[in-house]
Image (cartoon, rainbow, N blue to C red; front, side, top):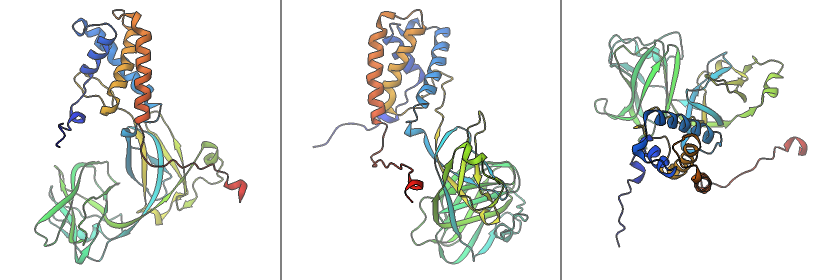
Length: 356
């Protein structure tokens, strides 16, 4: 028997307008009574509510994977904008795919992008060019790194081909380089038998100038142990060069960063950090903007907003407050209970020092 249903409920945006109208109705304010001042105040309170929910640390939809580069003799790793808290950090090693014939279709010396010398570059002479390698036997590429000499905004396409004519893109990113910075990406969909041609194709208004392009595979990841401020600050030499084994997370106001130890040496120039981190929830600045919540949280955030509006708006029916609180507590409990994955929970008691 067929089951009816469109399976599109999660795709229908729940906007700030929808939320405010429903929350106001629950607080005893009909939507037609809303004015600009009330909407402005309601949006402010909704954004404060986002902060409150963020502090619960359970928003799985806002947990993202990032790949961060390491730089030789630099022990600070800036975190991307919007990162709230790093929860897991791994050090990734890759096997580099070399041995092919480098090519560029927009000028420059292509081999300089694969020579392991960051002081040389393939300086393309026109925009929208590609740089890659032709191999004598099919090669697997699952990770790509690009070190750009020049600043600029590019669309980067990561493509393979079996004949050097027809290319298939298995990844694309919009990247803004500041100059002298790495960008790393994981590729999904590499053909099982590999490919003879791999390239990075750029789109933009300025020529692409890669100091180095890294085609890699066979990643190996090692968990890095976090340190607290005392562990890190008590290290006798925080600038000791070597292999990264630990980190301290400095949660600055606008530019949070990681202090890694040991400070990356020359052998770490192609090492990356694989970060799982929670993100800030997007604030709502316009009532027609979709809220940054999954469907399973719509009822909870609406119920919580109804409580806030009942408290702060003189037009609300204050006699409903206790009922709204009870509804919000139930909805929040259900949403928090569903904010989970199905993996078993492991506990590390950290008693190895006492039992060795």
